[in-house]
Amino acid sequence: MILILFGCIGLLFFPFVRADGSKFSLSKKGDYYEALKIVKVNRVPAEDFVVVSLDGAPVRLSDFHGKVVFLNFWATWCGPCVAEVKEIDDLYNSLKDESFTVLAVDIREDRGRVQSFMQKFRVDFPVYIDTTGEVALQYEVSGIPTTFIVDPQGRIVGRALGPRDWGSRESIAFMQSLME
Image (cartoon, rainbow, N blue to C red; front, side, top):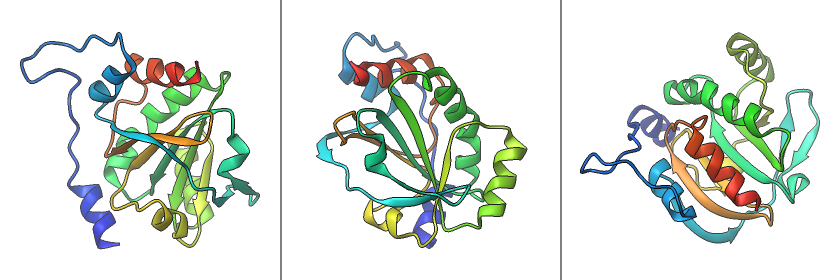
């Protein structure tokens, strides 16, 4: 828990410009990783897991095979997580009619608390609860928010620790490039 809290408090947001001040040319997929400060993962198979939806139904990662999955680990008490909620909602609303989904996994919080949070912030993306924290441990989450990008074949292609401008044009274009 201390590691998660430390990761949550100690994160910084990085701008989408190079050190010399120039903007990125996003002509290649690799440029998206750099622009969004996502660590590229060499297409490691994503381990399947089960979480619980806010209505109590079990959901598996494998239920979303064939879609790009934005797998985000978070908690309502985490300031950086709260800071990116609207950005994630913008991303979700931009791509929800495509081969894309958000799998936002709250770590070990009460369903009522999470539901109240979602209503307060008026967000539409689906939220699930890792009731025991086992899924976060399985994915070696050491700080939140932590996001994994899973391609349509069920492979992890990227990992981001800390908040991002997920609703940006670059982020939307990156997710669409993975759908191709």
